[in-house]
Image 1 (cartoon, rainbow, N blue to C red):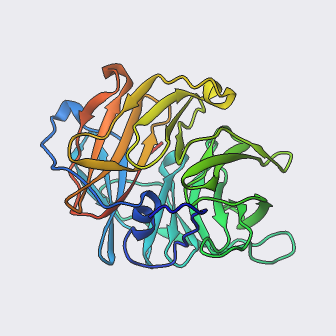
Image 2 (cartoon, helix red, strand yellow):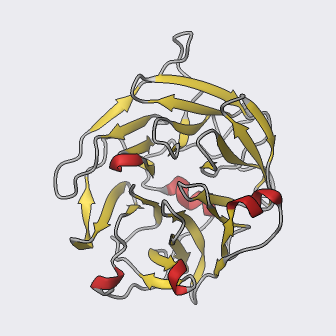
Length: 319
């Protein structure tokens, strides 16, 4: 649950997606309703958790009700999709694993990544919120004990050769996933959970500069054209032009407020081109529901995929 001081929570328990629920400070939401085949959220992924169990569900044009996807052993707390349907999972013990390309309906195999830096040492850990670079060659995670006052670094991992490189953020980091804004730069939520700021980490010139203020959660489209933000729990999810957001112009091209009976979004994701927005909503009955909103419908809800009963969820889009 967000507090007035910087929130640092490790992803170190196997209790489903407790870290994701803590990220938004909530448990979740309204009732689901059947969706039509025309509204199938093709490419959507949902990692859901309840108690000590987690499940990953995927949707495509042939699997309109969703189909289960195998997860790595050890308790998955975060999921991110890269190019060619390759996933990275962040594990409860603070490690990461990558999948072979997802072929829905068939078994999914995973490989634990044991990356080392140039000196042969392991990068700062535990790792949290591993998120694929748009180009798909590497992913970034927050490295360090998010529960302590230890410094936090952005850890860049190339899983093809198991190498790692870390860039210290140099400021208080809020427990929230980083968001890539292009192939070299990513945004990290910093400051205080009640008054968040951000830092832009440039992996090309190894620098950290101030980013936009006021977003507690951030998600970007893979093409870097759009960004979704939420200022605080219970606030609308705003869809913005990336350049305008980085320039601080305050404009938005879409806004999705929590529906009746819903407390807040706890996770959201834009698809690769920023045309669809998936949101995991949290409400008063202790359950999570999903909704998909589309730009071509003026950001109205176009689908409400059914998921297993859950108290936490992470959404992503396959590419």
